[in-house]
Image 1 (cartoon, rainbow, N blue to C red):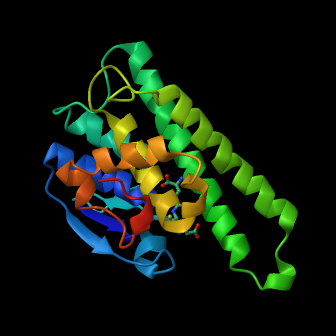
Image 2 (tube, rainbow, N blue to C red):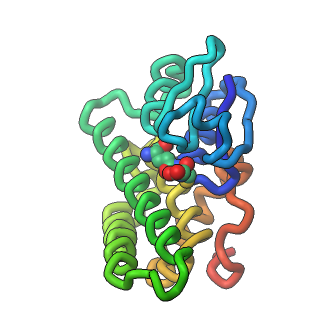
Length: 207
Ligand SMILES: N[C@@H](CCC(=O)N[C@@H](CS)C(=O)NCC(=O)O)C(=O)O
């Protein structure tokens, strides 16, 4: 299998971590979303895409994660108990949506200064701020997000926090507990080895 990814995509990082956690053999292919390899695999031109042995491709990241969980059930990254399973999937949705908003804000800020819309920027930033507030409140001091076990929820949270740290670090200033959580999650080798090139500014990294 080939995973089409970039070093910074939080969606690709989530899938990358799941592949590593499950010990599935794959070839990582670092590529820009605009590359023809990506549009051949995913008509939407987005990464990640997983190209299977028979050449058929899968996208988007929650679908790829479900595929990997179904085809390689162990180690399980989704709880078997239905309530906990839905909770984990809801964490994934929150984290993915947060990342979508960071991406949208970043694209708006890349427009020429005189064509950036303050209302649009505030709209996207509001989503990120609210998502981080909910994340901090709901996680509290629990070690794991769901079911007292390491699950997809923790992987999605690590990917999202790493991405906020990369693209909009100031939004973490109000959330030292989340910065701590990211540092703790990063102690796991699969999270550490998939970190984007620059994660948190040194001042924000707790020992
Ligand atoms: N919902 C998709 C989002 C993927 C996504 O937005 N990927 C970005 C990179 S972080 C991308 O490829 N953007 C290119 C584009 O939208 O044209 C998923 O979870 O896979």
